[in-house]
Image (cartoon, rainbow, N blue to C red; front, side, top):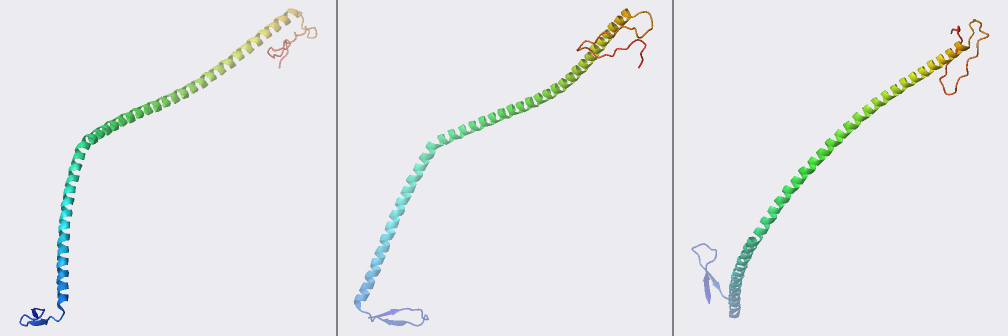
Amino acid sequence: MIHVAALALPPDSVALVSRSQPEWLWTLEGTIVVVLGLTFLALMAALVVVLLRVSKTFGQLTASLDRFREQINPVTERVAAIAGHLEGAAASVHEAVDEVTDTIHSANESLRDALATADARFHEIDAIVQLARDEAEDVVVGAASAARGLRGGFSAFRHRAPRDDDEDAPPVPPRRSGGPRLRHHRAGDTE
């Protein structure tokens, strides 16, 4: 049998190909081509079935997600509302804490100012008391000195004879312990 096949030859020429292989090889080749074709068709059919099932599963998954979304939407809206309320409450608490902190700082500054003022006044009062004590001490010492001087003078005047003789002058009374330390001068002594 001779088959004529058009090869990649110029369009004017025709080549003859001889069939020199055995007939069984041609049969095997045809069978393989048919089996491959049937396998391809089976694979294509299986692919179509798989695609239909995937499409059906995808549709069911989409429907399930839609139902889930419908069921979860109220929950997410409620959670969002609660989160908004919590955010507002946190902001309110934060503002209150800021106000309390400002109040405490203001009170602390006022307390420090009051303590500084009280300390300054305490030092002023202490200085006044010290001055008053020094003045009172001076007055008491001066009064005691004057009283002692008067007493000594009266005592000397009472015991003194009308003469100017210093040798016969009476002794000056002894000084009491704890009293002011004053010098007694005899009449007519000068320093």
